[in-house]
Image (cartoon, rainbow, N blue to C red; front, side):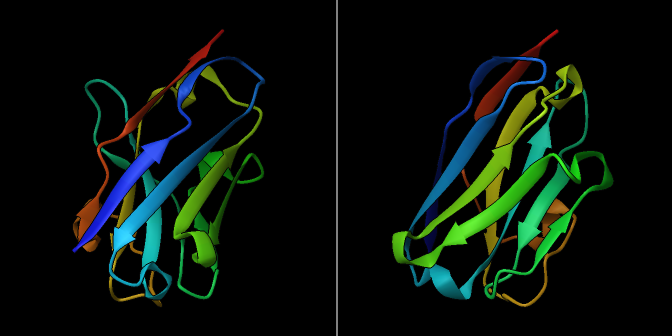
Length: 124
């Protein structure tokens, strides 16, 4: 089992920045791939960014150039640095992990473990 706990969400004005953290405990997190998803009210949970065990990154088109995913395996933590935030980025952001670590799926079904989510609200 892997337990994931997100933090760092909040309210920010458009154009601002936030950094989300996902702290993992349990199994050796360094061998896991990880992803960030988000879900706005009335919408499907959508892929935002992912990172393999060896730090290869993948992003959805709408956040490329604005968001950066990274990981610190010594701290068992994955980060999502979000800049130039837009009101349409408002959602609950979820961290996810999968034990097959060299692939970053872009659908929720590709992940084994999930955090509880953290709210990000971007005001215009």
